[in-house]
Amino acid sequence: MKNLNDHLLNSKQAEILSKEYERTNYSQINSSRPSGKPDSKHYIYDLEVLQDFINLIRDDMEKRGIRRKGIRISLGKYPDISFDPRLNPDFLGYQTIFFSGEDMDGVSATDRVESAPIPDGPVLDFGTIAPPY
Image 1 (cartoon, helix red, strand yellow):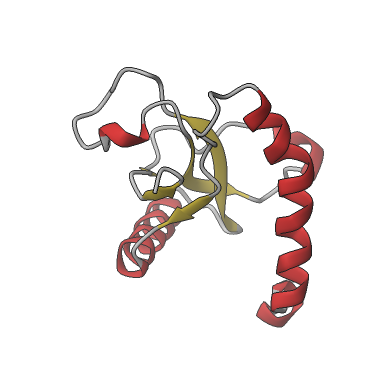
Image 2: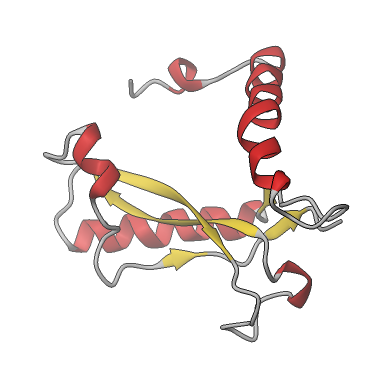
């Protein structure tokens, strides 16, 4: 599916996905977290930063000869102790997402689960997460 319209949801469909996540995964995640401190559920990136990153990974993959370029969105969790001075200290211990390039040539969907991001390729993080609010 390369047509944008084949990938778009309407707001009601998006609400179904959000409520299902809250009912299942999110409630499980929060059952092991401190009371009153639910894990992050929303991840916000400045559109200009995100577009610049897409341009950066597109150029990087082009130099590597990758024809079918993709973007991988991975789940992670910030440790309780900061590993980078750019990390907002309020985000310590919260789930996050980060972006990297993905070579989509010759890799099946099941293999992609176990594959690694492009070696030494750029990775984007340090957006805003909510909670915390």
